Length: 167
Image (tube, rainbow, N blue to C red; front, side):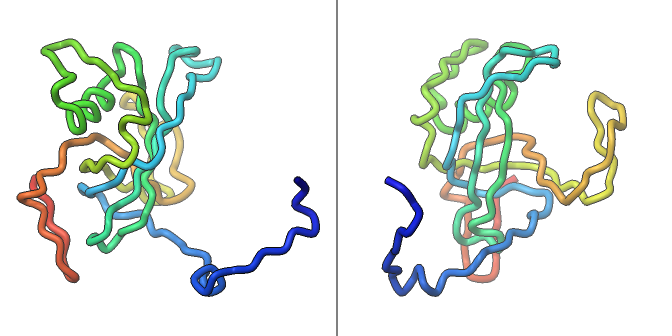
């Protein structure tokens, strides 16, 4: 099928849709839905070339002033860099963590699950630090995901004017 000459009939909702912009949320913790986990491999030129990771996308849940905002992270799937995958599995499938051993389900098992994503907002022009050294400056505001934890639904309070998470 070719797209050239294609004609669509839009629903009322589609006809009213407009481009949506997202503001990078402040540092903090956000209840999110896991919407995408893509299998990737570290590119050549890195010490970890050829090792697997997930390119992840989370969306802040309704009830937050930032609902609908996407957050992104690369989750390493190899020993020595397993901090985030350990936290993610523990948040979603706590029974799969046995002491220092971790069973990782397929990526699609996580899709649609809710977790708390924590992170730090870096401002445009601020120093980018890796392994204790300044390696450049941020070209735009960016949310740097630092970790994950389970949602404690008994402590999350959502109202029209506030969004509180347990710390």
